[in-house]
Image 1 (tube, rainbow, N blue to C red):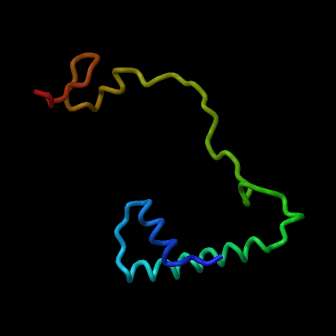
Image 2: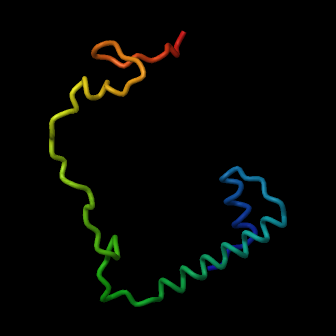
Image 3: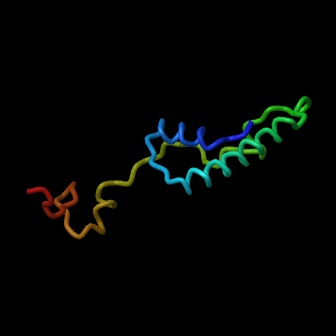
Length: 95
């Protein structure tokens, strides 16, 4: 199968793309090479190849989620520039 100028113009029209003649010529050649490459790949014998979604062994690298005690409020507020007993104080940003 080869990709013609008409094929490129048809797809461009469907995608609502305005292409110049130079772009159409370039794309028809590039798309023709892609289709040829896919046709070559389709000829490869994959009869005894196990289908895989991943080629390297993957494992979860995250630690287990273990609940622990929270930081006490007094400890969290110790380095705050401004606080009001149990809360951080910040400048008003919404008028």
